Length: 181
Image (cartoon, rainbow, N blue to C red; front, side, top):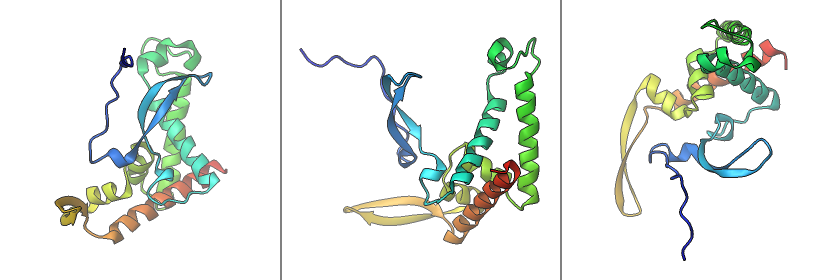
């Protein structure tokens, strides 16, 4: 008899995004492996960004705060562990997170950061190249790899990628200063 087939099929990311994901085990709270899934690689682990421990901590705080706001409103209002909301009224935790995120946004904008870049890179996990193409446009590059002709979109200039990276780092530094890590 052959090996039993898995009940779940692991779906791969599209070929354009495969480099932004890694196949990792999924674990329970107690550490038991229950399966495997593709997970997006965090911005601090790719794109050659060397973030300090304080910057990573601040970026995690920003993500945590934004995730509380983007969480399910029905779960938030029905789950007593998330802040005692009810009847469609946002919980106290969600309201605190919203005001905290607004203060972070003010700090980022005061430091000449860019909230759009911070959201795209920090929350959505987009690469600096993808953000640069979104802001400044792209060009089609043809080249030959292993005897095959390949066409890919690239940013118009690497200076644009550097600008996006600088804006991201300025935004993260503003959150570090705000959170006083």
